[in-house]
Image (cartoon, rainbow over all chains, first blue to last red):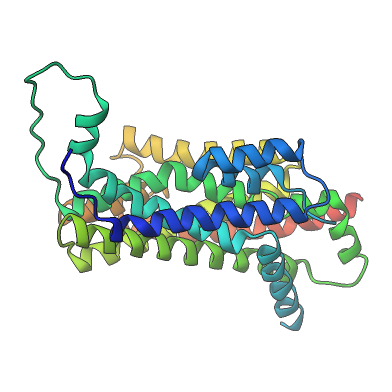
Length: 65
Length: 259
């Protein structure tokens, strides 16, 4: 296992991932109510990496109206 | 015109508030960047993940830059299209259901400018997301795999962008027709996939169909395309977008009169 991983090229992916997760969590914290229990969304956002945050933005968010 | 600008600003604001301007471009960027990286490290990934018998070796031809770009585009055709439809599906039906559109239409507003603002904001979201993702894919491919022919890449990107616009217009039309979000996503995604699938099966007869666009874009990248029906597919797609827009306007009008 001596493959040198070019972190400088992979780092942006991790950053994008982090941004999505953090924004998802902030939005979750601020939301009055979501579709489904909030604690479940926290787990989904944290564990299901890219798809988790996308799923929250698509399904979980209730548009404030 | 003033109404249009007002509605357009409202749509943009709404897309910002629902974080669409953040997550859709980011997801597209990630999709685009992922493909070159995964392709580059495929041998290592196989080596560490697979339980291969001892002594077995896989020799893989390192793919060319154009090939990786083509793979990225087909990635966009599945996951990208799904993300697109999911993010746009409630644009019209959502306001109808929450009662916002009833409130708007109690005043003398033009249906055309209402729908056009939604349409334009949808197009700008798609354009920004796709251009960002495609540029990311291009940069990473050039860095990790090899050079990409610039003229072919730009041409392929433009064709693909038109296909995404077409899919977005379709979603907007379906959103004006139906109410349930899942139904909208299912119908518009199904129609778009069916179009491109049918082109894959009988390309001779459907050379003019909008479903030919993604395949055309991929062919541009892989070799100098001598495909027939490019202009036809372009013209028909633009025509379809216009028809979808007109349909959406009349549906907004029709559903309003039923309330």
